[in-house]
Image (cartoon, rainbow, N blue to C red):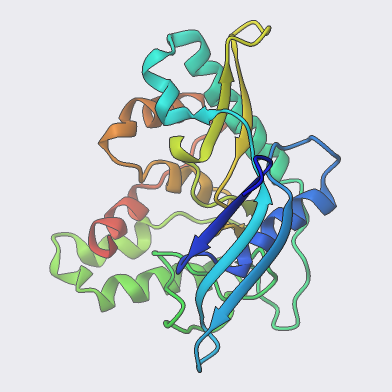
Length: 250
């Protein structure tokens, strides 16, 4: 493998990631968001058309993961990285949502209405296009009930707790410290710079609270990062209902 190329291969490597990266590079000005260029993507499919294995050849991004670097960072660079991450999120939201034949309001980065995401379903769990916020909330509720969510205390009240949104914005869908690359000791005020955002397999057009909701679903190892991302977020989102759903679906 050439030092400037990285090969991503596996059963969870889908065309959606390739589409997301290509969409970013074709829509935003160069160097606006540090994401890899894709050179080639190949995919094996089963008899039902579902991708069983994918391989993507893409640009190698410099730096170490934020999870690796976090213990060595003090408060100032930690906060700088978090604020810069939110700035990247805002830039990604400038990408316009494409019009689709099925009228989907929420959709994957590849333009299909089939989103592979824990709250909504997997590649074998089909559902109709989500044409508005009510459709999305109904889909989350459907999966919650199907997975015995009503057996939990206050389960019946979860539907009304689900957040509402009237917008559909481009979203990475899985931002956490392992997907953020950075360089340290750079000649900037905080001494750090984000050099890459990777792993766009869950990317698509989601409600505005979705990115934050996914950030807050990380494990204990990333608790300090989650707290700081929460503290530096550009606006308030009430995701208490989503948290209750996650306890059932995860």
